Image (cartoon, rainbow, N blue to C red; front, side, top):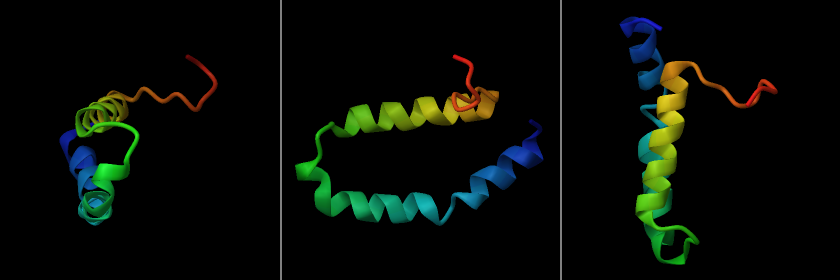
Length: 60
């Protein structure tokens, strides 16, 4: 994945990320997991996406 493809993918989420934060803020006291755990999960998923590691193709 080159830099241009990475930026295209990043900018495609430029609407989703702020919207998800705005949905998260009113519910932050009612969630099962803490902010740190959710951030670590999202960071790990993003790293896997950048490295081309996908878990839905049947291989683990």
